[in-house]
Structures are given as structure tokens and as C-alpha cells.
Image 1 (cartoon, one colour):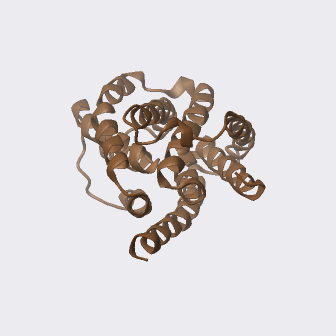
Image 2 (cartoon, rainbow, N blue to C red):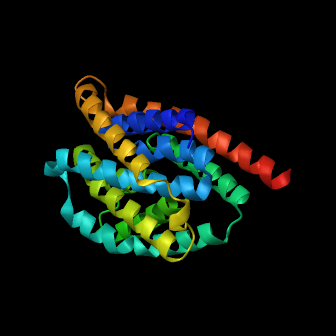
Length: 253
């Protein structure tokens, strides 16, 4: 990886981690399209998954008091229903078309994230079993595109999940989804270990996550979660469009 690419990677990690510390989400939204452009869609999304594991572990420790472990207990087994087919799809798709899919899924996820909060007259889901399909969808999206939050945002709105608890519970969910996505893709050969970055790059990423948590901890006192989420969506939108265009040029050129 060139020095310029490494600088872009670190900047994306710090920005995404800062936004995740403030709003509960942001690392995958920001990092996935950036790494898809730098490393290719399959490797880029897998490295995003690995980074999310690190950031979620550290941020989850900070927010641990608000975690809803009962809901997490439903999400955890449901994740397999989405991660396995997601890994199979990554293995079978051509790199250019996978880039198109990553870009398209990210754009769709962003539209859902933006639009869901503006809907009125939404049904109220009170049965915890409804969490199963949303968790499976989140794990599928996370495995393919590195972004799981939109599926869970919809469930949170429909179930009237308290924002503080939702924000905290997302952290062990992201940790689980990220680890599961990496394991599935490596085990079935969708992303061989040989194409993953050198260990020292992962240490650089970890350092970026620590910096992000420190910055985010300060900003969380001054910046609302809504503003942080809006910033993540803007950055992710630009990256998703770039990944989509690059994939289309490669596939059709």
C-alpha cells in the first residue's frame, strides 16, 4: 500500500470512528466505500469488517452500561442466516460487478437511513421475534458491503428502541457481524488470507481507532448524534457513487 493510500485509510478510520463514537454508527458507512476503491470490493469490505471489530470492541466498552443484552441474544444467532449467503455471493461475483453491488447497496442503505426517520404512521413492532429478519438482513449487508446499520435502524424505529440503548447495543452487534463476516468469507474462500493487508497495517488502523475514540469522546459533548450521522451519510454517499461508477466502467468497458 502506497503512503498516499495509507494516509487516506487512516483519515477514513479516524473520521468513521469519531462519528461512530458520537452517533453509534459511521465506521462502516465511511470506511467501506473508501477501502472498496483502495483495495477492491472484496478485500476492502473484509478489511472494513476487521476494522469494525476493533472499533466496536473499544467503543462498546465505553458505552457498555447501555447495552441491551436480551436483544443482542436474539441478534447473535440470527446473524448466521445472513452472513453465510452473503459470503457465498461475494465468492461468486466478478470483482467489477461486486463493486457495483457494494456501491448500489451503500446508496440504498443511505436512502433508507435518511428516509426511515421521516416516515409517519409506522407500525409498532412489539414481538421480539421481528428482530430475527432484521438481524439476518443486517448481517447479509455487512458481509457484502460492510454496512449493517440501516437494517437495524429500521427495526429501532419500528420497535421504538430507546436511542441510548440502541447506540450502545450496536457495538457488540457490529463486533459480532464483523468477526462473523470475516470468518465466513475466509473459510469459504471468498476472501483468501493472502490478499489481506500486512499485520502492521492493522496496527495502524487500531491506532487510528484509538485516536477516533478520543476525538469522538470530546465531540460527543458538543455535537448531536443526528449531525454526526448526517456527516457520515454525506461521506459515504460520495464513496458509494465512486465505487458504483468504477465498477460499471470496469464491467462494461
